[in-house]
Length: 598
Picture: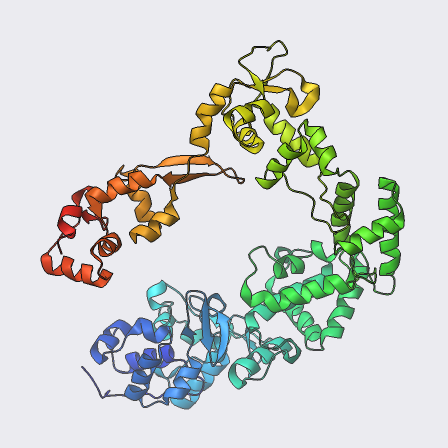
């Protein structure tokens, strides 16, 4: 392994690690970086990913400053994020296949260092995609020729891909003044100067997208980015940044003027949809809060200025009068309900200016309470007695309205009608059914000693096929069922057992391992009744578990049976060469007759 290079080039100012690696490769006549790394013991992939140990080894080999090399080399934290000089960026915001250089800088390097290509160095200021120009010379950065991903970080090899490319640098040089945003980006990345102090710690690439959307909104309202070329977007970013660097008040004023100018609401703009996406990327949290703040302060429904927006108290009074006319109740009753149940503060005026989104919840709550029934009236609507109705509430089939206005519970008529409809779907009308073998729900519950809620659950699940309506106008009192059928279904309905979670704790296995035992019929299971969410639980009878443990044991059950620790059982399995039961197909279960002898 080579420890001293014949020609050693040290890193220049702001040069990343993969650049000095490529330069030393070319200077020492190696054909590729991979070949050079194999001779020197370096790792190309880790250097390009900014690994500190590899960069220190590279610095030692080339006589460069390791701290300087690490600060100017992008270090990949994960598949999504990288960091350069202590500044976190999205990895896709750093150039790779589109690696670019300043032609004027390279022309100067050839004049001062010589005409050899290995004297041409990259600069970390050219790596962020947010920077499109060289702030030193005010020229566009130009992209290096590209072949494939294997040579994307070898800038000297890429220069040779197109014949005469290096010799044409002077002809492809194009002047472009650098923007305020680009200078601010490099100020934060290279000099650690906050790009927007009032926002706190933010990523420059995320701020670029916000400024681009803000500039688009200020210019066009609800325009689309695809309608503008790169030069126009370049100007929009600068316009958005000029507003952001002036502070929060300047941002709100600019947005307020744009809302009035374009006649749109914030929710229809590209900026809003970028700042408040459904998946909520964490790096956008600062801008998400800014957008929410603007929606509350400026209004998201064509309230163009704060001065022209109606007072909140006037808007609230208007909505209360509408609810009062809708329900026939007094305004004071409506206001008292909303204040008592927490929909309005004690002062009666919400703190936020924009309260339109709350009106739907107010209306729903008021209408539910207005049409609600007491317990006795609700039971009568279903055709049940108060005691039978209480079993429906206790079993969770019905729930009272959450309100502190009434002392006694109130029930929504819509919930009662929904329950009747669910039962009606599984009961066929038969007014002529007068057989002595059939009985009403209360009588059948008395005969088999079960709760009314149990019968209703069986009806809603469609288990009682013989149920029939004799008087549909009487609600549930008009249903007759066959008690013998009810008794036969009741045994399976009330049957309880051990859930997979219980078995996981008892057997010391993983959830998926317990399911595999059940799938291989080593552990017999049955399906319980539907829960309130419509799912059926997989259960195991305790006798079936005992039968399984007569034939097979796990480490945990064997330890409990022998009165020793689980580690002692594992040591006995290892020392005794005990293998897992072949019936388990790799699952950690053992023959009981074998493992209980350890």
